[in-house]
Image 1 (tube, rainbow over the protein chains, first blue to last red):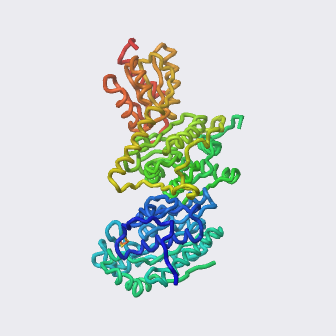
Image 2 (image 1 turned 90 degrees about the horizontal axis):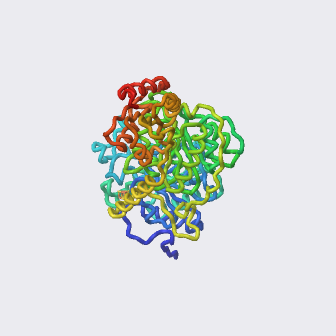
Image 3 (image 1 turned 120 degrees about the vertical axis):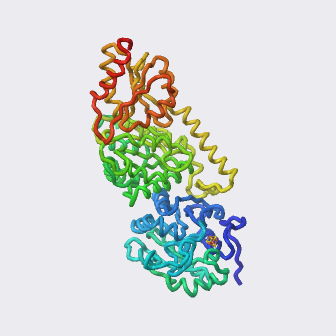
Length: 243
Length: 356
Ligand code: SF4
């Protein structure tokens, strides 16, 4: 039998996330990995603008804020200055794919030796549930009250498809948090991403399909079902690139 | 380096930065400051430094943000339209109290304006520029030598106060070549770096942030910033006083226009006219204490700027409205002539007859 305990790298404070939100699980996975890889004293994280903006309140290691979408540029500046540290960004879909598309694409193309944990929940959470670049076709949000219309707004964007042919991108995978099994798979993708960085191999990005029950207008359980039944059809799970 | 070398202002800035221990330069191409990134792209590999031509001005300033959090000296440079783009990052860095040196080799604005020299970013630099209640220190060189010296001062002040420092110059200084001696400061590592992100080894974790969601904490943070600005205002005013002894006409100009005004001062002093030049070197904090001291003898002020009149507002705030504050401005990036300044001085003298 496995006993799960909270790692020292996560602070034991009350969560500000909504019930059923994926961020809590992912914050914990990050903290577990930092603990297991024994990098607590050499990790530097960059928190995004979005629901996870105060990730530094939960994590017990060095963290920087970044302006909306700029985390990969901030990470570049940190990693280039301290190449022996382990640097990762934790970003949402509005942050990474809308306002920060330029920063992520160019950091990936340069092959910055950073890890990117990209939390895709198809919506802007913190600002009240607006359409994100990842919002599914037909999905209703605060700013797509009639559903996302592909002919006017275009279909949802897949960052892994954009990055997969980049020469300096070495590892791309997509996981989810809908079951203990999927959580463990996701954790292994994230572990590999950090390991690749520690081995100085290049850029890697792990996308995680994560529930936002609040702005999907669903119960926590139905949000997980929605990922398994619908979201994965737009965003297939698995390792996309491993070189 | 113990010998003078012939460099343009942009190159002098770049080498002075390297000598001041800046090993991380990030920048995006824009005229008229391209010599800086060209120089850095060659120089950084020689000193094991980092040069990145970033994908955007926004990325460049945010790369300096990252490097600055680690406690290392870093710089970016641009010209007016590019500086507008950097302002988001500057506002964040001001609030996060991150040291950085930002070079603005000004060209004409608004919009794409013109690539020729201008001083029309004075408001943007000295009054904030980005969002929020903040200031950056702004230094304005008037020669290639001063481009080098003030770059090194900028790094010192940035570290001392944990604040972004701007060097505000115009395209002429950026491009003009003059002999310059580049110094090597020796107090590079004497600043507190316990706040930096280096991995939490044998210490509590550090966080760099500008977000304070608790009202009390937010107010305390803003007050802390304001107290720092007050301290800088009282400690860091800089100005050059040129033939200002009992000056009745006081010309006020910074950067290249100040050099156009100097021969005018010389000419009229020879004629027995009591005229002098007050050259602000720090534009923020504006050197109001020194300027106030000169007020006693002055009968008329003349502000000379390559803009529609921006610094003149700080002059008026300093000297009040008891004496005339005249203005001579040139717009659109056309170089100002000595003759234009002389003509303006003549009109002031004529008003007073033989009295001045
Ligand atoms: S709004 Fe959505 S993403 Fe944000 S905390 Fe709530 S459930 Fe999570």
